Image (tube, rainbow, N blue to C red):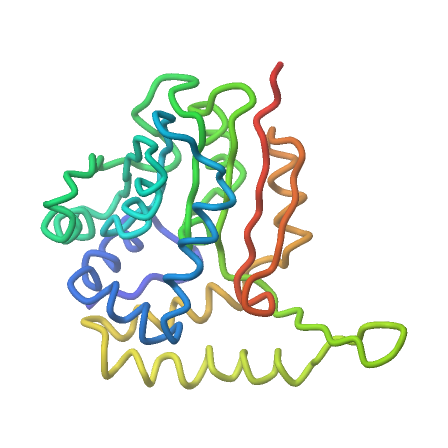
Length: 245
């Protein structure tokens, strides 16, 4: 089995995801304690999709996130560069007949301004050139269109026990220990490629925090960048808009 490294060579990353495709969705649900379903719903809500609009789901994997988007009535397109994930998704989503496209996030096969919205869930940190990908997302989005990024982030659980809220560092400590120790252990019992989840833990640890990612999004041609934490900051939703001009 293939395990990618933090240099994120596209071929290695794609091959790694090919290897986890068969049990990918089950593994994610187990590792997230079924929070992945809630995160998908929150992503759909953040996009504010209307029936008939077009939305592109980048790094969609087997299409479970795309199926959630389609519940809004929008025309949802799944794209991914892992053929193994797309094949697994085609079988899983057969009844829904979701459009699924093999595509590199750095070179999307769509005309300028094709979509009303673009989203990517837990895939941005696997791309070798994040700013270039964000610019490519803007290219295929209509002026005034929306971007929502759902991605692992930096735990930031706060409690107001005094006039000033305090960061609960214990929560972050427990979470980081889970990432580096428990996550690979659980993956060995559930995943078809446990070594891939060592990379998963490493990529989460090395990922920028909420504010840093927000600055990268803004510097890549998006405006009105904001974010909100989910599950105490384990996951963050970043929302932005393509400028009208």
